[in-house]
Length: 155
Image 1 (cartoon, rainbow, N blue to C red):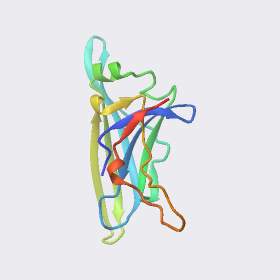
Image 2: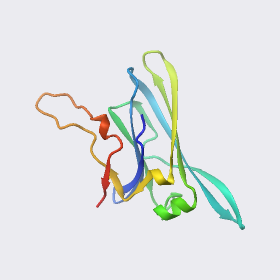
Image 3: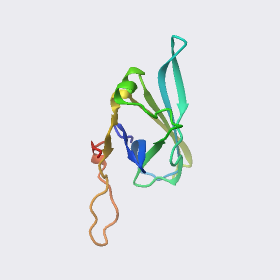
């Protein structure tokens, strides 16, 4: 299950594009891999051309699906998202396209899921709130899936 929105938020002294996901299946997922593309229209020699770039991720693959996974594309000078604002994302009809592949541990089947975030679903200057529940002594770590898409303004 993917978050309803993606965010562009502070990340390790810079910024990063992030989205979250949780395992909606009853079985464990292993060898989970994310591929993220940035699509938008660009002006090339006076013509509008659709351009696609695969985004570098902080972590492209995890061995097993944890409680939740926040996928991060660090935005640096080499990122096609560098310098983009909400307005420029809207103007270019930007879209973040995601393909997720994993192996269902119970059935040893490859499972694919995909989604995308259009410009109006990308919250610039917001961050996700914590999805983890407060732990009491000897309680297991747990999450509140209802918080998957909740954001707040980033400082």
